[in-house]
Length: 304
Length: 207
Image 1 (cartoon, rainbow over the protein chains, first blue to last red):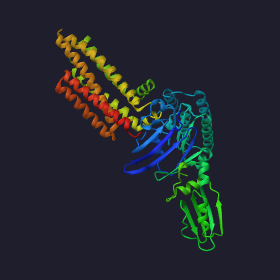
Image 2 (cartoon, each protein chain N blue to C red; image 1 turned 135 degrees about the vertical axis):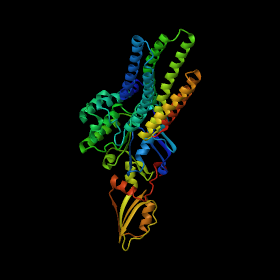
Image 3 (cartoon, rainbow over the protein chains, first blue to last red; image 1 turned 120 degrees about the horizontal axis):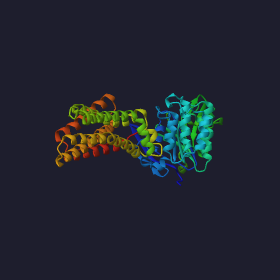
Image 4 (cartoon, rainbow over the protein chains, first blue to last red; image 1 turned 60 degrees about the vertical axis):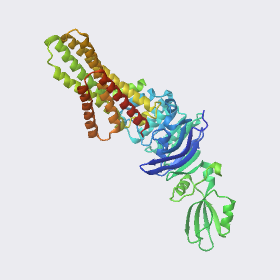
């Protein structure tokens, strides 16, 4: 058993001369639900494809279940469930045939669980994949990935195209999988409420760099959004480090700071503000602040 | 592995049926020749049949690899409990089966026909064995060419032109050098190199 099913070391990927991933390093511990966030085109899918060995890295190394991604054995592949963005299923096949193929090529197949999912999703076995709706394709892909009882489940924007009910079903399933001992999930999504609901560790990719990699609680406790009112015009520079975002209008300044601590508090107090109130932040607020053009890197646990 | 081979056979059923029909037609002509006419009048038609078979082998290889790229089959298969090498091995196994299943019966039939017309000399029998082995290797070489260009060529028109040109080139090599051991050796080398290059590009490509 590997303690870190996913290890990424100094991963760099160039595509047609453009840097997609720039020195990414992180690990996903066993039993963790890791939410990978980032705007469109920031490199989430590329990272996942590299992890699965579908794309070679330019530099760096990725280990999945203890094996180099580009040399994953069939046995290791059989322990990984994958739901691809856009659900790349073989369009010309019927649902029944695709299920037969996946069953035939799996190391283990949980027929009971799969049957339960097929009933829950009401998937028609005699329809061609190309005739299914996007939501049905997502459900089928998810059911196929879950049926092999994966030790590691990699989901690339899995709820894309699902309606609210199906999305809720999916999240409950994901929680069900994690509750089975030792299961690990890496999951990228645009729906931050979903990530907030199930992820216990978050990574945020901005322009190819991993600017956040910590637990959800830690992220919420480390990033503070403050509304500061000054007696006169707000100063243009506060001399506080790790400012993620700063907006000012007249006497008011709204400040988002990473790693807020007493030293930073003391520096702020030298400007004698009239009031300083902390604004509540959801994951979505943090994500928006972190993915603005200029954003400070939130150091990883070991650096704090 | 058996699941992969079964999938390949089912996906390429059109090519396989086409190849079998051509082979059956050729066999029927040969049998007709032996039992009815006792004359070698069908040779030009048989020649055309052989050309069709060789193009068919190339088309089978192209269909397997180009069809994979168009329908994005390998990205799905590569995330299941198989390696890319096994996916390719299953394809090659189906190709070898197709070549053997179509050419071996024809080779046997040709041997019988020639046996009926040629004098019983050892020299002729060695020649017949040489022709049969070289024909199998040419068929395999055409299939391997189809695999490689099916994976590396992007445009359908270019794919067809490349395929036809390379098949013509292989046939002309045999035409010029004859059906000897040196031709068989050359074809074996060509098959090995083409398979190695296909494996290398298939296992290292972005899927």
